[in-house]
Image 1 (cartoon, helix red, strand yellow):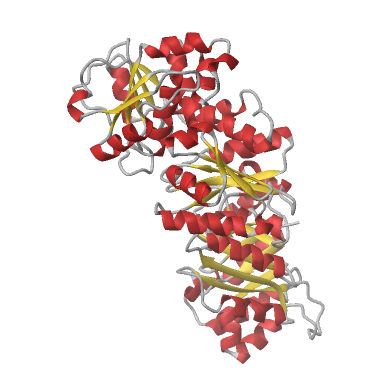
Image 2 (cartoon, one colour):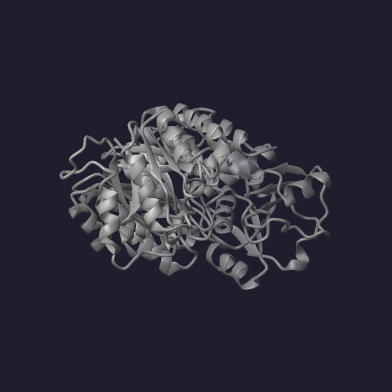
Length: 562
């Protein structure tokens, strides 16, 4: 079982009472160890007495860490003084479960090492001590070139009770190395990839036998980049349920900090009793990064990668990747060259697109078109298989929809609308990209006969007053995106209650486009409508069963303010 450690910094004597209350809250949330980070407190004249009180009154076994400045800590004094304090702490009547000390200091000075060994339990210790040594190394810049050698030395050191290495992840591929090091460990070991690309190394540590996972206290900034809170680990990621057989899913994109997908899918897995965990995998925009990252994840068989949600800017990359790997594509992905879902089944790859039916369904609801039939048509189903199909197609035939954008989402939405029978005009700041969508999609044969109608539009044509709906398929207005304050709709576009404006951006819910369209009298569909639909479809593909009714909608409404 991987222990969750809540790291609580205490900088001054006046903070001790508050820190103890915070520790009690962390234990109530599920922490099994408390790390007292007392770098600055240890330099105070009353520091030792305060630290001993923290140890004595800690609600669960604890770790005491006085981290040196060389490895990101706040201790500015001499190492000899720091070691003397740790010796007093480790040999106290009520000592901590562990003290944490850096490997470099232990190796740099035989004298320091001898003094540290006086404070901890080991095979040559003549006193009956309960305190063990966490021998650690941290690199806040990058992966150290001698990482494996460092960890091997910790494993070989008989005084080392727990080996701990942490480095700032360069990419998600660093997590795979961390997993393999956890699997190889001959003694209790903590391997952490810091930063956003390393979140999976924390969340999935129980799958690979990691001894501890460090969390930040609720409301605290944390002691290392990428730390999650105890509730995030346990409630959002289902940390307690993760085991060796857990199948791994996740979202790939750039950026993905705003994504609600981990919260939704993990809650869904827990609700239906499915042994899966869904984590963020941030991958930079370039094809080379995407190809290298997915290849490494698939090649690392112990990961048990079973599926991925793929978002901006990688939806077209996913189709290319699956094609090159000899995998299969669903109808929409094959037609539009973009997919948002990867399934891994017995070594074979399948790419699917749930964006198209989700967008068509959300828009159909606003336009009073039978949604279920529209979603089926957008998925490439034969009209004869859907009783309301002809009626829905007839309704779409009279509608003109402007799709704003020319990326993977725009391609999928244009394809879905065209399959449903609508007339689609694609607008983009780079005209050539809109024209490329027209070349790929215009006059494709429809499953039930006829042809699709997708054309590119000129900027001057968007204000023609002839569109029944506008769909934003760009990242403009997205929290954390390239321009969170922008709207893709020009001011000269005429809007009233006969026009529907739909956004695909769901964070924030009231994007600049949504606010602007509502103020000008249009019927508005915010990005949560499409997001919830596509997530439910993805969940069905991942888990092989329907998403719990209403769960995803309630979680999104809770997370995204009106």
